[in-house]
Amino acid sequence: MKIYSWLSGTWAAVLWFFTLGIAIPLFRAFPGPRAAEVAIAVFPFYFGTTIALGILATVALWLCRQKNKRNSAALALQTLAIITLTAIPTIIQPAMEPHTPGSPEFMRLHGLSSLLNLFSLLAAPTAFLLVIAKRKEESV
Image (tube, rainbow, N blue to C red; front, side, top):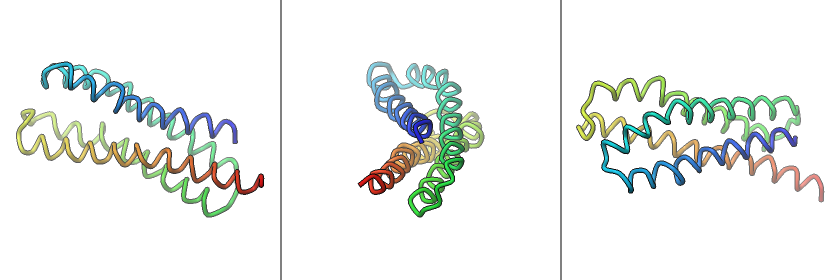
């Protein structure tokens, strides 16, 4: 369970750090097109890292084989978070490429990408808290 805790915590930390610690300050510091260029350059690392950590955390939780409702809910949340994170670079970003930044279609796709990322930002730590809450109940 320690490996799961480390992987899950790291996964959530990377998700939150990129969003709050890199993306938001980047777009505040630079004009939109320049900030977008930098963000796009970082995306392969961000998505590769978060998807890999999510998969590893999910496998670690699955291997714990503790059958209970909280772990099942955590597995479901993590799996959905991995799917949504994977959809962004494989489906949404390629669909954005032919559109001019700022155009209605670009903004619609960007909004969808942001929404999916937000889901992952919330799902990863929620899953972790579900598992940790169960552990604390068992130790009392």
